[in-house]
Image (cartoon, rainbow, N blue to C red; front, side, top):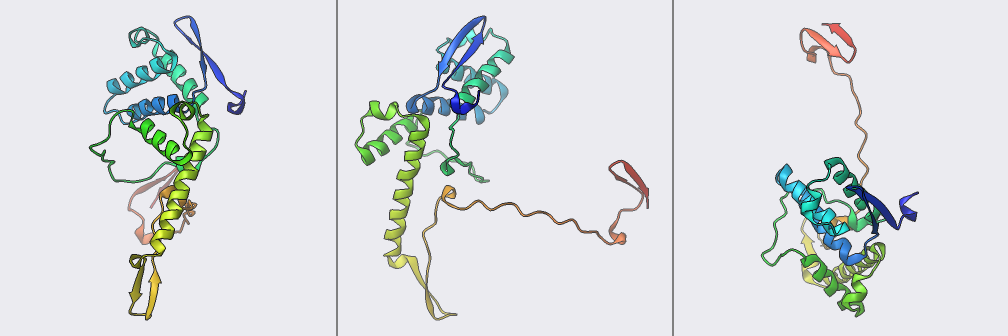
Length: 220
């Protein structure tokens, strides 16, 4: 059965079978927040703590009961739940951001804020209630989020183009140049990595002595 047809999964823990339904938007956000804590855990013990918290929240099992279950069954349950709830559409907004800069949390951040942020965005854009937003299918919520952010970005770009800050005079060309507003990474084209060309180097660059080239040994 492919993930496109999967709406629930049966998970066996301690000889008990649990049926896990695919999450709606609010619960998915809450569980994704715990997954992020697993990802950024400082050590193994902290990662295990958040992993158990994830399964406990997803299946409604007390953490102290999970602590006595074989670790492979725990990991398998985690993998099944994540697979079941992985978005089925490759939205550009979900592309990972490659950056060497450390993410610094703002002072107004708190656990669970992401849910209230998106409630605010949806309610402001569409006038929906909290219950309507919470019950959205995962893909519908993410797709609409992308459209809302896209609309806001294009509006900002239009407003930017009407200001003097968007233009500067180039003395070398004697022309006024337009500088577009920068876009978030998910709105930019992903460039395919260029193939590295292999070139031979001069013999005098080769090291002196025995050179190992895979299975061959060459005496220089």
